[in-house]
Length: 101
Image (cartoon, rainbow, N blue to C red; front, top):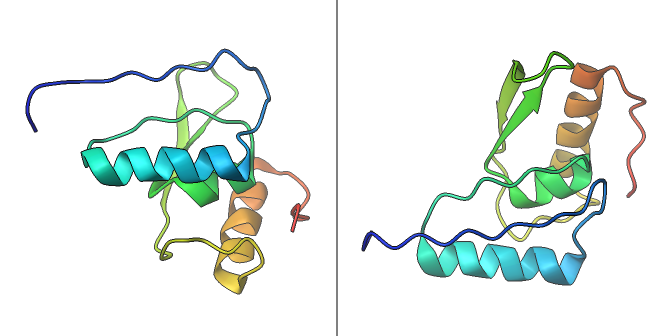
């Protein structure tokens, strides 16, 4: 790493990133080979973009659990592995197991 750091911030509560924007973010990540912290409320989006997901608890600043996503890219949202990861996270959160697929 050359010591340069770039910060990309979005001010959009509950707004999901489009598939095109997700691809752009993955391209930037691949080109820079830097760590990226991405905060989202959309589980499908998290599984699409992340290598590791940190699930936060309702108690502010408390980590409920972490999950490593071992699934090659590009990630197909209809693939069994993708649907299984989404279901696992929804279960962890106590949410319905339906996905947007």
